[in-house]
Image 1 (cartoon, rainbow, N blue to C red):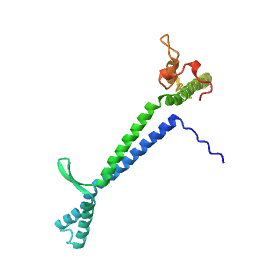
Image 2: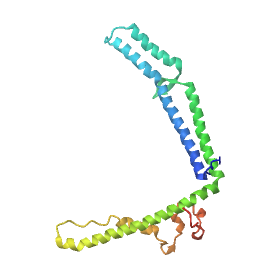
Image 3: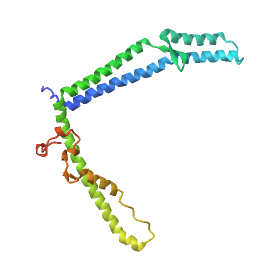
Image 4: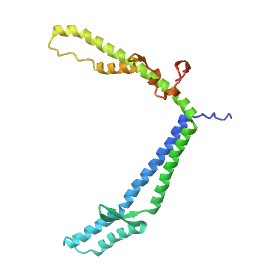
Length: 230
């Protein structure tokens, strides 16, 4: 059997894989932080019904019920036995919170994993500068070409809109009472874009590389662009 050909991944694809690992590590931290929040409020949630029971007794709204009291106390003790109880200041008052020591440790480890994954992304960017620039340049050139094509199409569409409006104008003047013809909604936008795309600014020729979403020093000149690039 002929072994399957392994597709070589680009530097950008490998970078995205590393960034995906960062996002995955961040998601794990987020999940643990949510669990931590729920855990820290577990003691108060368990004590709530017990407090309500005692309040009902004090108000004469309920008769003493030893069975119910045992159940409510057992729920509180169950929480207290499974976590550490810490005192924290909350708006000037002391509040007891439940802390899951294992979860706290895992959360710190997960946060370290995020830092390690982010550092790996940074090292990869530093170590693969030429490869990344080589992968990004064709995409940037293609983005420039698409931008110019969209500008040409926008100009053509604006011209067609104006031509159609011009054909209506003399007839509407004779028919009357049909309301005013709308103004070209692209008139202001195209004027601004014309200045943005113009090769001259105040009589000074502008660098065409400004239309390419890449550092100018890394952008090839026109004669260096690959004719079969994307």
